[in-house]
Length: 356
Ligand code: MRU
Image 1: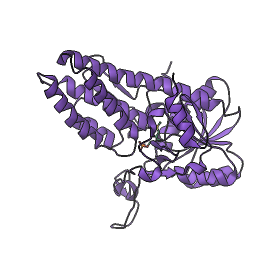
Image 2: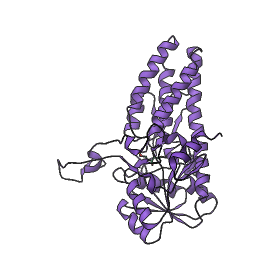
Image 3: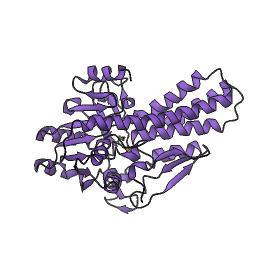
Image 4: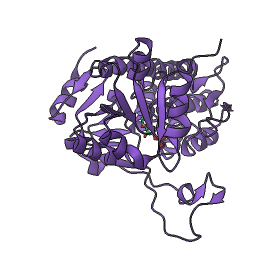
């Protein structure tokens, strides 16, 4: 019996709580390798090089990373520990700029540190482990709830298009945009999913197509520039994407290419749904103009996986890793506490304030 893909834990602590075990997402779909990391430098590098990727998974990895650094500390007092914590937090926060879950998770860990200020160093270490575990456990529940809400908008037999990878390996479990697809699979919805390959790093081809195929979902891989034809041919009834940061007005940053899909969906009259944990909503950003967009190396575009040249030597290259989808193009933002419709500034605020 093979392990179901949703049972794969892409980010976890080992049994001794000493090592961060990460599924190396850069090696998929060819190899399933679990990295064993313990230093902050290795964890920073794994986030930067997308060995762990996807907004919620980055947040979980950072929370465990900071716990492991605190665990190994020889600090004798709270003040000394807090100083080391701040430095580690600042360092991990410099790994990637766009996914707000990274900063959200680190802040949550720091809030817990402050709450435990009166405790012994040993008790604080244990509390930080508990907080990182909570972040992980809550993410699984959040994804399941997003999946249920999203599924309520979909009908059996529909064609769905997704971009990048917002699946189980990008989260604690189930994913965000792929969660309704997994739930639909359990309930015989018979979706046909189109996965954009997602240039330049092919998260759609390498990760989404792999995940869904492993789960037995009917998935078809297309190049990014084929989205228009599949929509025009009537093969797609809804677009589902994840997100890295949602501004207060609903403008949404997600993997580069997402905003183009939203424009196409509007043109063809297809609903465009963003699946967003509330931790991805950043009310500190008034609009998408405030969201920092990561620029990555030119080699990601000019060479095939950093090896064979695919472009002339020395050509100018622009490689933004994310783009912002204007809120006018979004049909709904699906969170764990319900579905937000325009005006998003009001509906998102309401959901953020909603009690459990
Ligand atoms: O650069 P990546 O692969 O980390 O980008 C990931 C995405 O854009 C995902 O859609 C997003 O983080 C949501 S993951 C549930």
